Picture 1: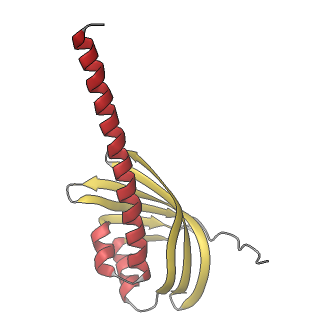
Picture 2: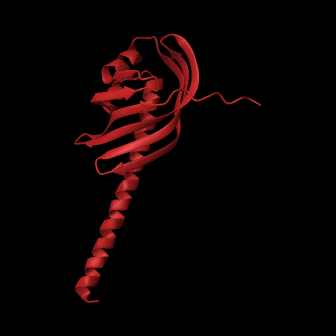
Picture 3: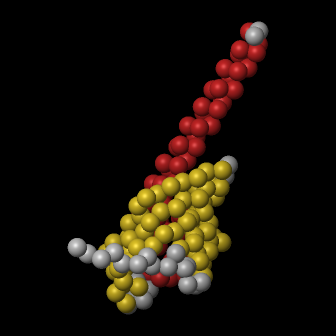
Amino acid sequence: MGLSALLLVGAMTLVGAAANGAGTDDQRILMALDTRYQKAVQDNDAKTMSAILSDDFILVEGDGTRSTKADLLRSATDGKTRYIHQEDTEQTVMVSGDTAVLTAKLWVKGLEDGAKVDYKMWFSDVYVRTPKGWRYYFGQASLALPSTPKH
């Protein structure tokens, strides 16, 4: 193998390593961003929610209910919804170019439209990279998971 071929293989290896590192950075950024979003929902922090949500955001819940960015921001400010717990766990992130899917289990506890709730569910969130950074574009939430019996 000639020197130019060795240099080409070396350059390709460095590019591949850089791409893998970028993917890992994106995964960490997205996990932190989604955790920040869940904290904003818990705190009814409409300003942070608005900064993370894409303007054309859509959420589809397990029962088929569809919500827009405006719906979620209204829910954060109308006083009918208050969470004492909004935590995502078991996060996984897949990044492909400027699109990413984050899946996690969410524990929700508090009041939703004045009714007490305490449940866990799975969700998948689609994030899109924009010139201003990653934005939460689409969410799909499961129905509440069956309760686990306490021992």
